[in-house]
Length: 391
Image (cartoon, rainbow, N blue to C red; front, top):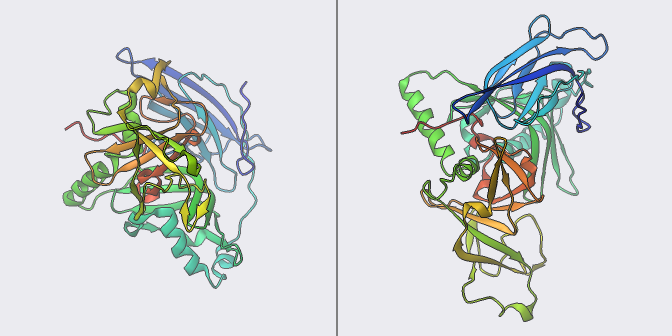
């Protein structure tokens, strides 16, 4: 029996689940996920529940008996989401090392505001436009939220904090990438130029109107993929990051006193970068999350960027049952040479996390993204099971 820890907004469902792995080509393996969804109180099966792997196109629906099967899933790290109208969604973390036999129960949800109450907010349209900008990102102009009226907003006129809730999963049609995205919004907060949101994502292939549109989607998906964080992670575990255009260097974030300013070694380089349209000079810190003190509008401190390129072994280590351990000291300054202005910073927030051969992290919250990758939002995202053509 496996017991689950879950957030206050995610409640238990009942789910009998088994996983089976089949070895393929000695290294690659696939898994089959089976289970049954039932009501927590009546213990009756729930037909029509949506079961999917978060951030992928892998999904199915439970049968009249509450049973479901997800077949031909490449082995790796996943979060299995079970969603049903009128009930609280639940998740199960899966990895190659797990063979869980889970019993989880789906409980009724508290009904959120209906559309009449939501649209009664006189500032709803203004808040919705802000939400689209911060949630979808720059490419949001090519996206349509089909059920936008399910959103409700709260804005604090004193602190200027904007929060959002959604009574149902958001349905987003991305005409640039050709995906219909179902997003279960758990939280959304925008404050002082910073945006934080979390939720579960299910991707569905849209049907192209013609071959021209299909080619456009293929091209746009490739542009979105190359130079992305998932591209970088995959290249790391395959030890091909240099060949694929990535350069890794050590970045040491510091806040120096005046007396220490001359203590840099001659081989050290002071980093200069552009992030989100603003130039950050040598005496600015690239810690954009707010660390450091502000003097005259500038952050006090320096970052040391070492000129030597880092090796794979200093970032990713031994294969552990299909997973690799991601762990590094200080921060990584990553440049993608095949695209203009693609620079990013990675900082470990925990000592380590595992990453599978598909580039999926066991704990995505273990790594802080800054720079280019931090500017990418929902409109820029591809499903984790996306693979570009080999050519």
